[in-house]
Image 1 (tube, rainbow, N blue to C red):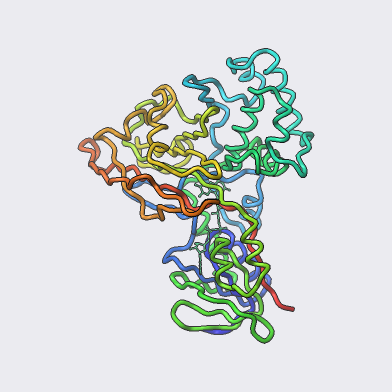
Image 2: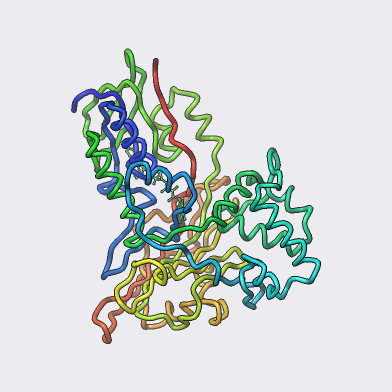
Length: 414
Ligand SMILES: Cc1cc2nc3c(=O)[nH]c(=O)nc-3n(C[C@H](O)[C@H](O)[C@H](O)COP(=O)(O)OP(=O)(O)OC[C@H]3O[C@@H](n4cnc5c(N)ncnc54)[C@H](O)[C@@H]3O)c2cc1C
């Protein structure tokens, strides 16, 4: 393999976007992806006409990813999430998700003073008038009435995926809620659409993409870096962009203290996810619900985006894990035990009409106290719909790989 100006480690969204940038700037770019397919956590698995993202995925309409895609001319086909018709699961009862004045009036667990404070708080929040710098989210929300606090922390969970109000940076959380107010898009065909578009753009600009080829070591070398590959080859690069997970990045260059230090500063965001495909929705009225007392998320993405065959439904259920919380099978069972008035799937996923397969994804993850494990393995179950002939399969993947949202680290030597 020839030497290059820039070697990129990782072919997820961050690596591909970096590749579009550097190749577009005329730099000779080579991107390495250890998996056989590009995409990382933005990969979509296609099966029987369903498009399974890895857990619920939505593009923030006013976010940085959307801007980058626009800059590169990568299409983002899909539609806004139906948050306006969403519901809050408060205890065992559903209430409209307070998104505007009308829903505030019907958010029944809230008393009059709660509603007034929530209206004022949401107004200030959307204008960026709540200061959060240097404080945790809970330090900011502590000043609110208890029920208002719970609504704001629920919205923070929804938009950041983090169930850690004591450690989550308040400014980051409030900014992200504000971004969510500008709505999010569910994508036709899943996030694979973005990956394919970015890979096409990077290649079109001259980047070389090597999938199925891991980088195994990085070492300072003359005017740049020596990049060693899993097949034993090596090349020189003037600069390296790290777009893999922090622990891998630290292990590739153990003698570069900055990388280990950066990796040590990030905390994984974890969720237990169930991606569920059904032949039909038992409760078609419901499209989106959020738990307030419990960190639950339920959404029928196929109501909005083309992710399922005609008549079918693709549902995402998630349980946001607290920092030290271990994922268990009960986390997956709780959403199905929610009131059927809330759960679009009801009990269907446990019935003979649906099935659940253990995921090929890692079933361990590293929390602050070391690797967390499922309490017991999930057993695959399958069935075929006699009505339609296509197989209905629910895909349990737990836990997710951490959803770090951090910019790629750059290694460059002048
Ligand atoms: C359940 C879930 C829901 C999410 N929902 C949203 C959402 O709604 N909106 C949103 O904006 N974001 C969402 N995210 C986050 C988003 O998916 C990620 O931020 C994004 O996909 C991360 O991209 P990345 O390129 O930084 O990392 P990754 O996707 O992890 O890519 C890193 C890549 O590096 C590769 N790699 C690792 N080691 C090596 C090596 N040694 N050599 C070569 N390659 C290597 C890996 O195989 C991987 O493909 C969600 C994430 C999860 C898990």
